[in-house]
Amino acid sequence: AQSVTQLDSQVPVFEEAPVELRCNYSSSVSVYLFWYVQYPNQGLQLLLKYLSGSTLVKGINGFEAEFNKSQTSFHLRKPSVHISDTAEYFCAVLLNTGFQKLVFGTGTRLLVSP
Amino acid sequence: ETGVTQTPRHLVMGMTNKKSLKCEQHLGHNAMYWYKQSAKKPLELMFVYSLEERVENNSVPSRFSPECPNSSHLFLHLHTLQPEDSALYLCASSQDRASTDTQYFGPGTRLTVL
Image (cartoon, rainbow over all chains, first blue to last red; front, side, top):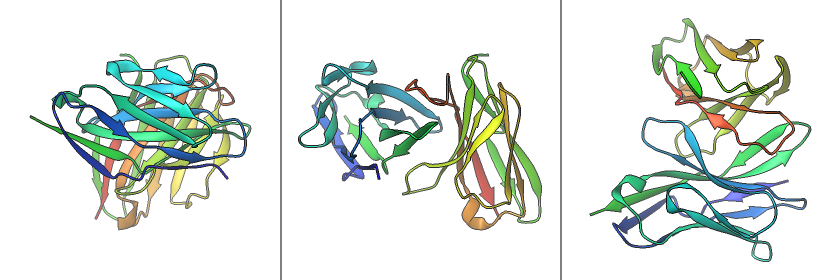
């Protein structure tokens, strides 16, 4: 079965510092991976996704992620965070079981302070 | 209005009440989803509809009853809920149920069961 692990429930960081949010997956088939962000009192918004091709994926708001098959990871990075990046970040893997099913991790709360 | 909208945004109900959550997508998509988001738990897929036909019922209790009258609207009818059903209920849509297209989420309905 496919699953996603986000080991860090919360990551505090200072403004303008770099950040990495970790995501590991388990899968025995082709992997499609996603990062979503949820700002307070809002729904989820897609940051970026990996379907195939280049292992370095660039998303919105300056975020990027690297697909690493050997380490089964898809970590999210940003070189310099802003206060406005404070949010919950979810990693997800797509199951294609006749319909599109996203399996989400438990989320990582990014707390950016001045 | 664009994207995926949900009403109401907040709902408080007693265990004997009957209420409904509404979701509307303005994206011309063919697939719609209901998710439950509880604190400290991954998002749980509840129901999937494709072209108004239910294609997945993820072992959800019968006190939750979905309805999809057309491809733009999705309802979740609630009756005799339990306090543990308190959560954020998110609706999402995608172009096609079997594609790798992005799922677009609504802002959610925060449900509190007293």
